[in-house]
Image 1: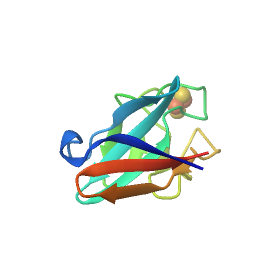
Image 2: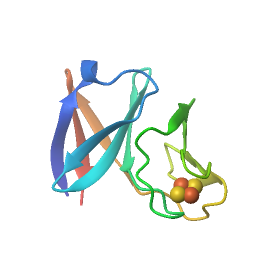
Image 3: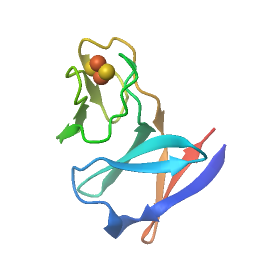
Image 4: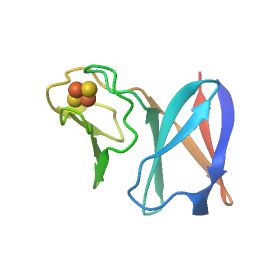
Length: 102
Ligand code: FES
């Protein structure tokens, strides 16, 4: 598993989805207070990139058809998507934010 630096903690506004390109793959980063979440930034319903989607508490709600995903588990918590989004572990060291990506 590779540890990838995705940015400085101060660069991530609270409850806002920030896309980070990692080798051509978009990863969504969301900070909720002091907790960071990372996930594949593509909706499993019809593949929309989730950038621009609403973040509400610890959920992201796809801008296209409204599927909701728990940021911690990736599980769908509201259709039409049934499949989860893949999540990645996050490590914060000082101000540096890393994700662990396979
Ligand atoms: S593409 Fe996200 S809910 Fe349809």
